[in-house]
Amino acid sequence: MTKYLRLLAAAAMSATAYNAAAQAPVREAFNPLADEQMMRLDSLMTVFHDKHTTFKDDISKMNVYGFDTNDIPSYPADVIQYRLNRMESPIPMEYNQFVKGYIDLYSIRKKKLITHILTWSQYYFPLFEQILDQQGLPLEFKYLAVIESALNPHAQSWCGATGLWQFMYGTGLVYGLKINSFVDERKDPIKATYAACQYFKDMYALYGDWLLVIAAYNCGPGNVNRAIRKSGGHYNFWKIMPYLPVETRGYVPAFIGASYVMNYHKEHNLYPNPTVVDYVTDTVHVDSRLSFSQLSQSLQMNEDDIRLLNPSYKQSLLPYPTNAKSCVLRLPYQKCMSFTDLKENIYTSTSQFLNNPYASLPAGSLDGNTCKTGTSGQTITLPKTVRYKVKRGEGLYSIAYKYGCTIQDIKRLNGLHNNALQTGQTLTVQNNRM
Image (cartoon, one colour):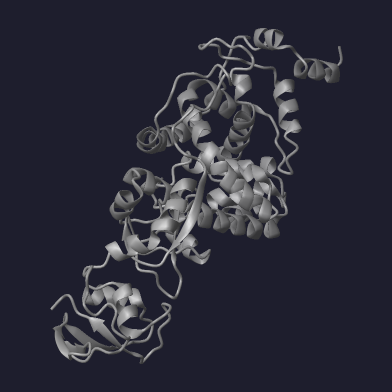
């Protein structure tokens, strides 16, 4: 039988024959780089995935090949290469001894890790794919997040790389990610993915080769350029591989191995765990400072789930919106509907003065700390206020924080309809720190 016919036969096997053919003795390729990579991913998985999911044991519906629980399928090289080719990716997926080491590692020794990653891929991959498709990039780039962070948005490396896509602080800022005491958008699945896409496009403009783009994502274009020069000017990963940093030599094979296993996990008796996590989510825009505990009480939702879906907020709260931009909150779809219905009540509950006597007064009617209202001219004692002149670069959040009030307090007292301020503008500010 020719090689081509053997491949067709392998692809067309019945479930029973397929299972039998998969039980050949397994020999893992030794790869110390892969071992080090797996130790790091194991750690990331343990501190995140186990904490946020509840699993069940029934995998019978996904076990389409009828494997026993302890079966470890193994396939010849030509079948694996055939499957890689069937992925029809613009990224060349070559099968060799380096890639074999990672496939063996993912599919045999690290089955629990892959099970958890498969589970969370059901939430993250649709988000990634939509953005990658919109940006005109290969959808297979989603697998880089697997080897970067094990799909843990809180992942942080020893050198400070953070988030699903492991952006360094400086690189994150260059690619437009906000990082401050309250927000780290490197952990935001949507914004960080857009930033990663821009990096991919920038690197492809330099090299015109997707594997070199992946290598540059790991070690930077400087190291890739140096390896190209040392190789005699080759723009091919496998030819410049010996001249790259040690970690990067295993990075591209790890990507190909992860791509294969994530696509053909059922063939290797690997399945995602059915989980109670709600993958159907949407976003709402929030125009006031809200804590996750407030949201939890108002929406009758577990606070850990809010934190899970909004990993970029560092203090478990949505800070005061600045520069006329509202904060984005991701929630399960039904909770988004609830938030929309309850929004005004939720905002009101955050005020430090739920029954402010001046809440209905005309904007700008305050003079000092007392005012007259009503036809009787009754005098009402009001909280302390000050007159404040806006300095260059200041926003409502920084002013509200300085005086211990809320953005809504400032907007109400001054008749503001948005968060935009002008340098030199004079505001009446409630001073709760006096």
